[in-house]
Image (cartoon, rainbow, N blue to C red):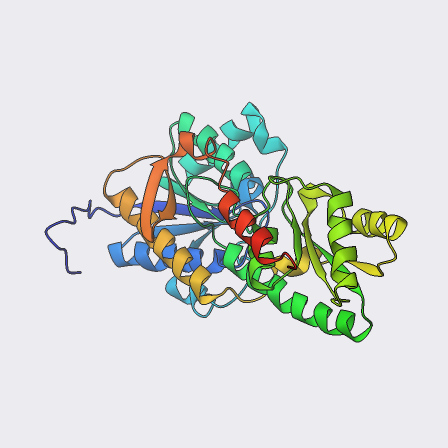
Amino acid sequence: MLITQTEVFDMSVMRIGVLTSGGDTPGMNAAIRAVVRRGLSFGDVVLGVYHGYEGLMDGRVKQLQSSDVHGIIQRGGTILRTARSEVFRTPEGQAKAMQLMTAYEMDALIVIGGDGSFHGAQALAELGMNVMGIPGTIDNDIGYTDFTIGFDTAVNNVMGEMEKIRDTMRSHDRVAVVEVMGRACGDIALWSAMTAPADIVLTPESPRDWGEAASQLMHNKLMGRFTSMVIIAEGAGKAEDFAKFVQEHTDVEIKPVVLSYIQRGGAPTAADRMLATRLGARAVELIHEGVRNRALGIHDNHIVDVAIKDSTAHNENYDQSLYELHSKMNRIY
């Protein structure tokens, strides 16, 4: 392996664990692949932990070879499976996980997941394990990084479904309100509204009076635009409730559509595959550089890392200026 003057690596063999936790997201497999391939390039032993923290406590561990990650970069979901664990939230569960990692002689653990997964990683860091966090969540709700793995794919999935919904709505001169994921973060709704596009977007960060939104739909109809598209993040309300409100206050014919898990499935986009690959490889490199307990991300197209204890403190990544731009571009003058 060629080492440049700026790279100083600990070339001793490491035993590195990797797990996926929380909701699955397209690109997790690409990150797993990068961890394994980069680890093997150092001569490391890479241990795959199945079913997240639950599997970590139960010892569901397998040494991963290059053949285990061959052909998975294009697959959605996670080959390591994932789960949420209430037991792991307890001190007893965390102590049990540490015992298992000690038994497997793990030098470090790479956790791929969202905010809740990072809280778990921090708990293990406080108990002495070297932990690296890779942000994998479609919501894009981790503020220290510009993008999380899976977000770009989710937006592309929504765009594709919006095109199909628009076709049938236009055929019947109807309005559709499409509910997308995002309990606390409206990024999927906002970015999809800009790119799908949609006439109205409702997000938890930018509350909009439903009466005003209904009036805009009525205005669109009076101006000859019989088909409008509305996107609502689940944190801003339910599509069914919004549709009922519009029907009660206008004569606009509106249909609610809930995309649900379809947003999380399918092959990751090139952007998510690239992000996951860069983050996974860099996590292994940081371990070999002797760096401890970091969360990785991307900022201005550069891979960055912050202390794992600070990673969940930055939970605001919403771009209000993008919301305002959407509003200006969707007025009917």
